[in-house]
Image (cartoon, rainbow, N blue to C red; front, side, top):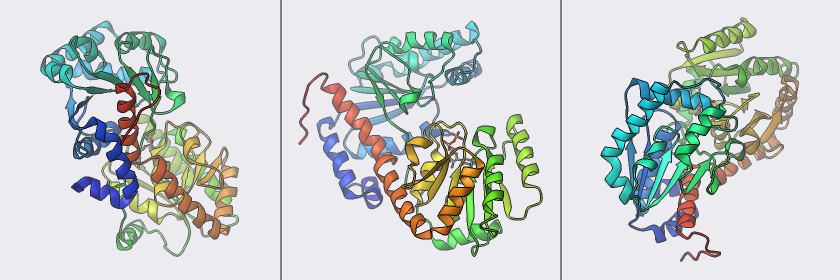
Length: 413
Ligand code: UDP
């Protein structure tokens, strides 16, 4: 077996890799191209960085192209991102003109390759017009939306829809995120990479080092929430839950880890509220971590007894997936994609209030046996549903399905 496949097989199991190989057999030698608008930063780039070489090892000729543009293009696509998430602000015609012009320029460079590809994945709205600019395409084109488009700003959606209608299929992350389009739509949830710094197994010594660095007492229980300082993540509610839970577990420590967020005025304000709510409590640690602190976050998640993500609104909630993968019970807010991941008494508990969270914290810390059982199920649940290999399997199944059209039955050897 090849190098990456081997490495993944060690973590996800040989059966999962065998399944990928089976699905990729009818796709040997096919040309697949992914197009997005950034090589680094953001979830899409993170996924593609591993998914593209993994697909190549499976014998599918997969490439990754990045479109680029000037300032107006990025202003426009940022506004589109916000508008898809519901921000009601029109986008100036001049910015839309830059968006279309940038796509035209990029189409000049990419046209031959895209028209020749068997399958093209266009990620998010940035490169969406490329389809209309490749009139001689021979393959199937899929629009992959990673954004919560459940309540888009309507004039923007009407505009984007004109670029999207011609695709052969589109993919959304959750049913709730989808919009109606005149072609088959598929739901493919996000995933985490078990071999990334954020998720790879760590030696106990590294976890201990991180405990020491942040003065976390290994002899006392610790609960953790990792998230941006955003009101929808309800960090103040977590502090409240910690206070209530301490009536039963007085030695309980709380760690709230988030980014520095100094360029985000809202984030700065929320951080102040969090600091105020924490007061001078030595058992509440507020950690401001740099954006690349992946191993530190990994170690904190492993050091925690319980991972909390008490969001009142959430897209998918990758921090939940990360916590579950580390064998933790997760106490999550009853919202968005957290509902897909947290199953009461199986992978953790869904809660709506600080009181609810405190009761569940008490339950888990008093019932270590149940907590251990839940932790095992949590890891297994992520292994089966939310790893990069499942994500790739879904893409391969989608390709096989598209190539077979409306056939009732597809035989794989
Ligand atoms: N994250 C991080 N540093 C932070 C806060 C979050 O690296 O200070 C990571 C976190 O581990 C997760 C992602 O950023 O991988 C957040 O994704 P999620 O879906 O939980 O929330 P979002 O921030 O996208 O709303």
